[in-house]
Length: 66
Figure 1 (cartoon, one colour):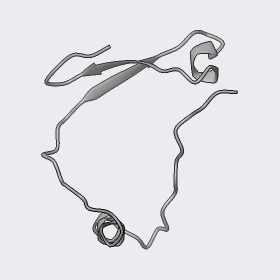
Figure 2 (cartoon, rainbow, N blue to C red):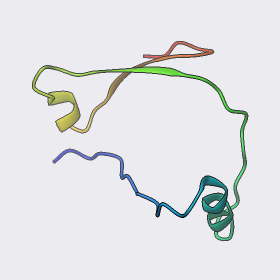
Figure 3 (cartoon, rainbow, N blue to C red):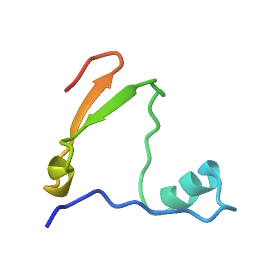
């Protein structure tokens, strides 16, 4: 079975700053400088890569990654 990243939906009334505050009560947080990145995802026509738990992504930013 494919292993995909988990996604959590936050309540509408919880903004990003509130989320960071709550999270920082249990975990040390370190903010980094925001960067702009363009990501392009690739897969076969039948989604085999995704279903196998894989990901093929081209990332364009300060460094180009595949």
